[in-house]
Length: 79
Ligand SMILES: [Zn+2]
Image (cartoon, rainbow, N blue to C red; front, side, top):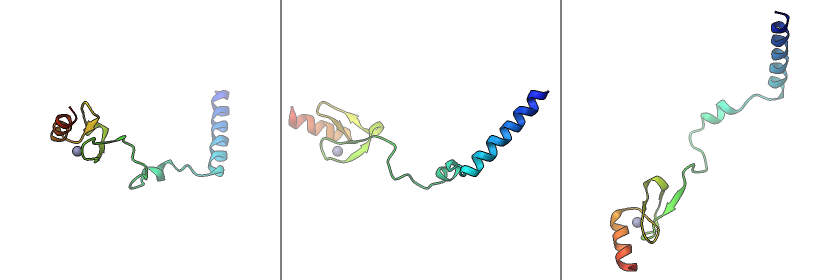
């Protein structure tokens, strides 16, 4: 029982020191409307140059493409 009290006092001291050093910024950062850096990896369509998220891209012979039509025309032209 003595150790429980000691731990509680230690936790209180650590909490006070942590509070005085500076308030945590995590809750504020979470409420930001949009982050300046895009979290997703962006790829470029080899046919038209449009940037698109990696999970929406179509892989082809000469790179990735925004649509099947661009993949077809690219592959038809490049061989
Ligand atoms: Zn395209």
